Image (cartoon, rainbow, N blue to C red; front, side):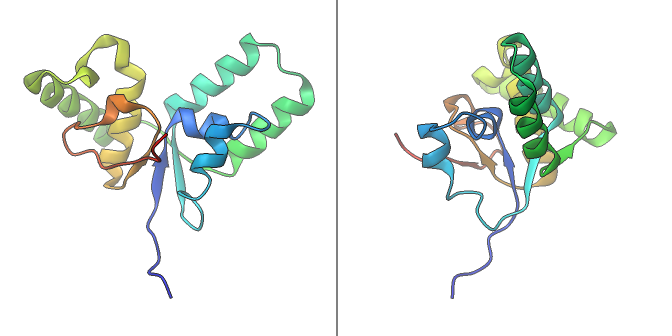
Length: 141
């Protein structure tokens, strides 16, 4: 019998891949969250909804997207997450990590969510590698 696996934060790339039929990324990452409580970041939900509306998804596809979102515990901002986000940016700036850059504001919110909850981040995005305090779980390509 295998030990129970703990919860994870699922990054936008892996989360949204589930919404794309026949997505190879979704298929590769399917085993990682199985049997685990999944958390999503408010930033990921915003990115996913923006992309869907921008691309003009139809009603059925939008309903499927909302069902996937509704099945995930979404972490909203609060004082502790805000503090974690700022501290993460400072730490990344001090070591010259890309996560400190403005281009990665959205990624930093997602990383801060995992850091604040003290759980791994499931992602295919290499920007999280070697970020201070972030435990990334990924599947090699």
